[in-house]
Length: 292
Image 1 (cartoon, one colour):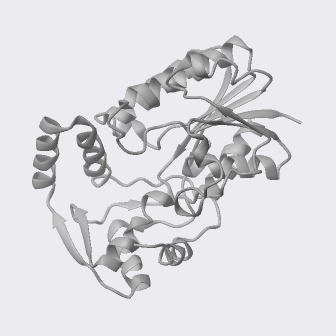
Image 2 (tube, rainbow, N blue to C red):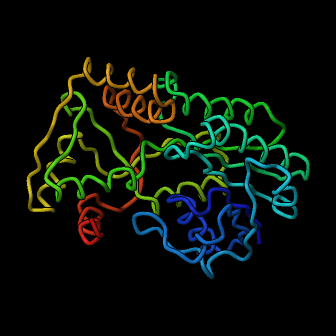
């Protein structure tokens, strides 16, 4: 039975990865920064970790002294550590790069056999964004290290678009550009299967998206249909959105980076190989049951 450390275990994807590993008979140590999150369900229906992992290691990967023994006795490290939204304490490089470097250094020290890391699909087209720069800086370090590794590159998570239904229910949504760019976001459970397959496989990089391709407009329309409330759509032309992003950079770098990501992905198609069985309509139907 292989032993796996899961970093980012209380995040949307991390919870599903712990669940998938247990379903396949792995022994799992979940690295947890905030123990209060163990017995609570995750965002957008991700499972609770309570009674799911074999062991919980309490530590903060940005503070290497707190995770000194986290990799002891494990054969594989999986990391989906990354800053999803600003916490106004850490920078993207603190988490997406340095925290993962701290884990990699420990893994190398105790001779872990494999390291699985989740970055971003088509990162080379988004290198103007600080958090993408941080992800890819770590990717380069990981590839150069003396450890077998796999980079997982998803297009985007269902959890990132669950808010579409909430916006439709509130009667207002924002669109950058014309909304015709296409993407195939993926459900956490489907992506978790891809990640665990990577532990068992030999691929160096795996690009993954969900089984359906949508334009932004089609996602907004689907959310409106399910909410039974067509929202007012405020469409921002790119020149105006870019100007607003530049202004936020003067006042708050963290908010600027999130806004820059939004305007960048609104310009490009992000379609990866299709995986999984979860349909966006079913997910949006679930989202309708959430408090808004």
